[in-house]
Image 1 (cartoon, rainbow, N blue to C red):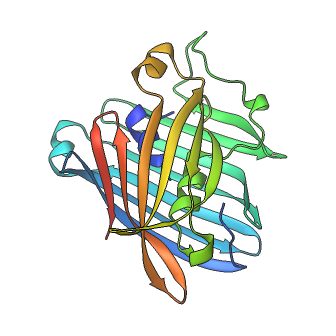
Image 2 (image 1 turned 180 degrees about the vertical axis):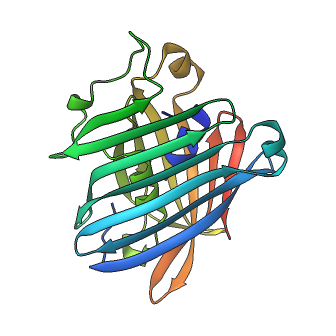
Length: 237
């Protein structure tokens, strides 16, 4: 459904939510100090439901080598600190290959409705019917990055399923460091990945840096992470 690079970025990204809230942000993405693109989202929480759109767009010198764009929109229900996705739509263009995917959820269990181009026979992957209680990667991104009351920041665990693979995101509680308030986390490949993927790397640590957002709330100002291509950084505009 997406490249290992995108998975390691998006999976880095619920929390206790007010009855109604709107949130949006754009992050500049760099790898080894070089600008490679942007990650953005815009979402709303209202009357126990959430809806979000998001995009990853390549840029800078990287865009000359490989043009990448991923667009997604997703929606669902939220109660307390629990997100339950209902629909997830993704469209991707890597310059050489275009793809699309649609997942819907029934009682918290993902149903893969569209997966183009189709998987080859014997292509592997997990049975969606066995992935109840998971969230899609974009819901996880929104849950981790959105602006929240300071007492509700970080300290969460999310099981992710992207239509083929299962992974785990854990984020510890906020801690005060010389750099300010930070949260340490990890993205981990769990199942459905190829043997070569698992042999290559299974754990991707990351750190969220928080900043005040007014009215007793905080937002994620910066994320540093390990990727397959070296140290990555996302900085909020």
